[in-house]
Length: 485
Ligand code: NAP
Image (cartoon, rainbow, N blue to C red; front, top):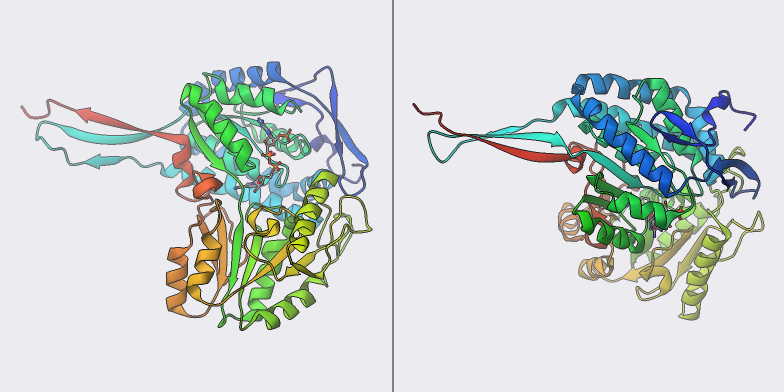
């Protein structure tokens, strides 16, 4: 941490009601690339979670009472500070999460972009007037913030998964409590430090760090003062949290797992498809919810595509994300590596063939080699599960109908990608894919202006875009009578 320009960005305590709270025990944050200790952070629990909700409730009247312009000025300050400290925030992120520094800095800019976007979008929370069925009435619709928002976020985007939620919540006039993933609390706490410097008042943005996921999760999902719960993480945990939210009928949004198909049609620009697949698969060592999970290739171009793809993947350089020229970092833990190895081994036993990688990398126990498997079928574990690692299974198809059927044969529905130059194929396949986001001749699709979210068991609600505020607002209908004399 000594190489940071601003050491004050490293915080070791939860941030509640504008102050830093210590607890009796600590939890260790380790660098997945080296196993070294990065920092010890106070291990908060149920009591601190309740305190944070109380703080958010107390601050709600003040924050929701500010004008959208006043909130936008403070959020703009927050955005500016995040960009000013992009280098330091990137380093902190790489140290605790592992992704290459260039990617980490990209995540800071991506997260900050949501704060900038929603600071402006908060000024455009328009209502509606509706022609009434009777002359003596008028119908008006207004939108109001839901109240206190609680959230739980994962380790794979320690900054952006928080920024995407907090930006919309704060712009809407809600106050916010987040419990970040145990492995990556430092990025969240650095965001809190900058929120304070930006002038965001005490109680509006609270971060509670602790390893009691279940206990703290129960408070965040069941507390009567929390009006809305938002989660990013795995589908099984998301399902459990939805049912916990039922007890108080909270508004809920879920950004869950994915199993993205990447379809290469026979007329595709193969070089562009290779670049798209490379970016959407190996970014963050394959640990993103929108990562390509299965590459479906038309049988006529399978050989040409797999040769070009293997050539491109073999140039990727693995290592410590802080080192220059590294473009694939470690996975988050040894357990994550072991889980990927199991999926690969089981698929090989069912007939898949390794054309690249397939093993734990010598660089360290958290590194898995960028891998390509051919002869894969949709029922193999590497295709039917969310891999969450740097492994590309190649599956052959004969025609458009088969490609669509294979692509949709999953309970997930987050992102999908396809490459074709035929306008008819483009419309039919875009409409036929049962996914929330579709990349067409494009492997990187996420940005603040676009609605991010899934269908089926990938969740509900949208983050970013003009639609993103609705998840943090209630619609109120005003019926005015006695207008006619
Ligand atoms: P995870 O196990 O579901 O964990 C996510 C968060 O939930 C962490 O903060 C975790 O805490 C917490 N958690 C775990 N069990 C809990 C429980 N019983 N009660 C309350 N909280 C609980 O997911 P992950 O494996 O860390 O993250 C990867 C998953 O997230 C993948 O499935 C990925 O696709 C998904 N994801 C989705 C999106 C999206 O936008 N759709 C974006 C990124 C990731 P601990 O850290 O203490 O375990």
